[in-house]
Image 1 (spheres, one colour):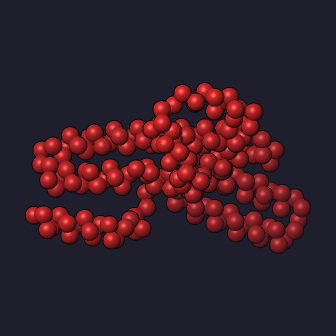
Image 2 (cartoon, rainbow, N blue to C red; image 1 turned 135 degrees about the vertical axis):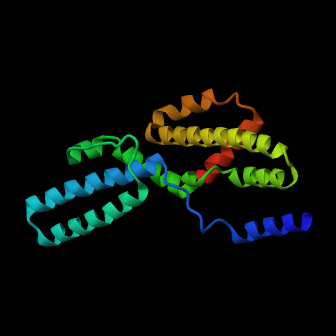
Length: 193
């Protein structure tokens, strides 16, 4: 039994999870949706200006975007923009920035701590028997809380970046955090960079 467990765990770690891709998150879906609107407005502008090369490129970009949007899926709350000005002044830039941060940090592929949680679930599943269900439920709660922490930290970083005047008051408000909390927040920030 122990040898088979070691073989299974070794195979999982050696194989990695590069072959798996979790579903895109809401921000990624919204970004793909807004990209379609941006390209649609670009097509209208190209039509108005009459440049054949720009029309062809815009039409190609539109076909490419439709494939990406189909793959991503429809967002729960799609954002809409009627003009280039509404795209520039609306939330499209923030959504694009958040989508980029999530893609770079792998936020949509799971928590920074998921490998440890998954290992714990696997070990309880192999050795824990009846306690495995309780361990899986507890791990699910931990995963949700860690995901929430990551989202809050990333959102705070975006806010401080977009609103520099809030950086000092924000830092002062966080000064009372415990050393362990500061270390965890630092890990989340480092993972997002």
